[in-house]
Amino acid sequence: MEQQSRNQEGVLKTQLVTNGGITTTVPYQVIWTAKGFAYEAMATGALASLIVRPSTLSQLTLYNNTTNKHFVIERAFAHNLVSIADGQFGIWLCVHPAGMSIPAGNNITVRNSLSGLAANAAVGVVDTAEAVSDDGWFPWGENSTSVTTTVPGSLAQALVNGRIILPPTAGLSIQVVAQTAVVTTTCGFHWFAVPKSELKVA
Image (tube, rainbow, N blue to C red; front, side):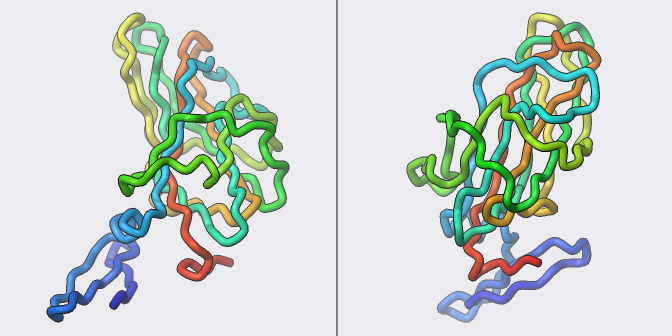
């Protein structure tokens, strides 16, 4: 039996009662992963960072192509591939409201189910370098700094933790802003595709 509640920090928890009557409290991420709702997808090619506020071009876009699920965003991330010494970069995200145009492609093949299941490219349309509406870009997460010009590895991530939810036909775009376009990154998303019957939103 499941019962949901929130702790003092407002984090959603689920109480599970086992057959033996033992009650345990489990984070929602564990429950949704166990149910097969958890997905990740990322681009592999190096894309140049912007040096201005993003507008109508995304580095990567996630579109909810389902009719009966909400995409609860867990995190967005960017990994540095080429840089300059002490090159700084940060993540910007833009939520596109329901009714947005479906991305032109679904060309991201690096996908995972985080439940040990086969990756399912049918859950979510994910595309790079997508032309999108400027529905409001905001910086998310901490910035990251590359160490040298030749050694990649800096990672920036926005720990969204469910504070962005995409209903059907809504989307989310990511861009990376740095002090120079020499800084190139590859981006991705981690999300839960939660049935409407389990998660009611406005």
